[in-house]
Length: 200
Ligand code: ZN
Image (cartoon, rainbow, N blue to C red; front, side, top):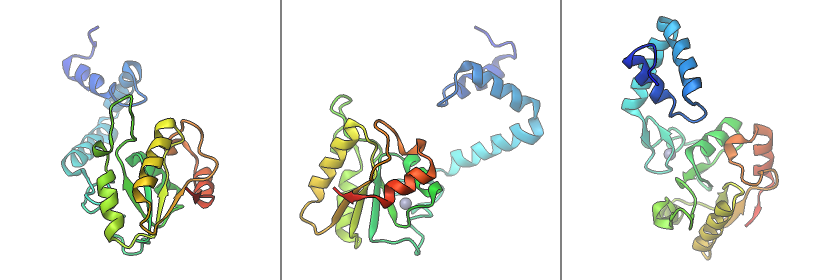
C-alpha cells in the first residue's frame, strides 16, 4: 500500500513501525502528529535522535547504554563497589535505577541462556562478569533475572560459576511475576523484591 504523503513520509512511517509497541497504524498517527508540530516536536526530535545516534555507546564495564564509557553509574564514586546486580538487559538496569532502590553497580548480560535459541555463555557477558568479581572487591552478586525458565537456568549457571569465591550470591525475592521482565514492575514491587533478596 502506498502512503498518500509521498515517499519521504512513507519511509519515516516504515521506520517508526519497526519500534516496539508500534505497528504501521500507530506509526502513521505518530508521524502525522510530529509533522503537524514541525518546529515544536519534529525538529527537536530529529536533533535528539541524531545526537543519540552519534554518541550512544555501551559501557565497557557494565554494559549499560549511555553516552560515555565508563557510564555515569560506573564512574560514580558514591556507588557501593561491593554489590553487583546482574540483569538481563539494559531495560532492566534502567528500571532498577528509575526505582532508585539500588546503590551498587550493575552487570548487564545482554540476554539469558537459551538452548532453544542457541544462546550459550560465550554469547552473554558472563566471562566479563567472572573477571569483574575476581578483581573489583565485590562481596555480593545479586541475580536480578526474570522469573522465566531461561532466566532461572542462567541464574543457576552463574551461581555455579561463582561458587567457592567467598561471594554472597543472592536473588530477588517474591514479587517478580513468572515470565515477567523487571521493566514491567512498578517501583514499589521492585524495591520490595530487592529488599527481600535471599541466598541463592
Ligand atoms: Zn557502566
